Image (cartoon, rainbow, N blue to C red; front, side, top):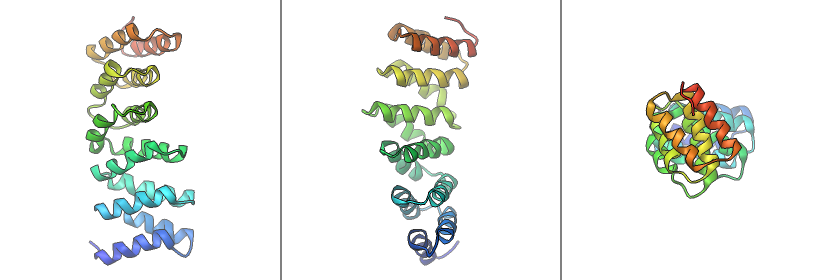
Length: 195
C-alpha cells in the first residue's frame, strides 16, 4: 500500500491537476484506497467538479471502494438539485448493494418523497439480498402513491414469494388510481399471481 503522502498527492492532483487527464488518473487511482479521508475527498470533489469525465472517474472509484462509508456519503447525493448527481447517487448505492443496507433501511422513511423514490430506485436496481423485504416494507408503509408504485414495479421484477403478492394486493386497497392499478396488475402477472 502506498504511503499517506501519496494519497494526499493524489487528492491534490484530482482537485488541481494540470489537465483533465491528470485529474482523471488521480481520481481513478484513489479508488485503490478504502479510507474515510479518500472517500470524503472523492465525494466532495464530485459535488463541485465541472468535468463530466472527472466526475465519472470519481464515481468509478467510489463504486470500486464500495464501503458503508461510501454509502453514507453517496446517499446525500440523492438530495441534490442536480439530476446527474441524484442519478449518480442511485447508481453508486445500487452498485454497492449490501454495504448500503443500513442506509436503505433508514432512508426509506426520509421525509422527502423524492428522496424515498430515489432510494426505491437504488434498491430495485441494486444487487441487494434484502431487496424484496425492503420493497415490501415500502409498499406496506409508505403513504405516497408514486413511491409505492415504484416499489411495486421493482418487486414485480425481483420478488416471487406469496408475501410479495399479498403486499401488492393490499396496496390496491389503499391506492385506486388507474396508474396504480395498472402497475400492480403488471407486477402481479410477473409474479404469477392475479388480482
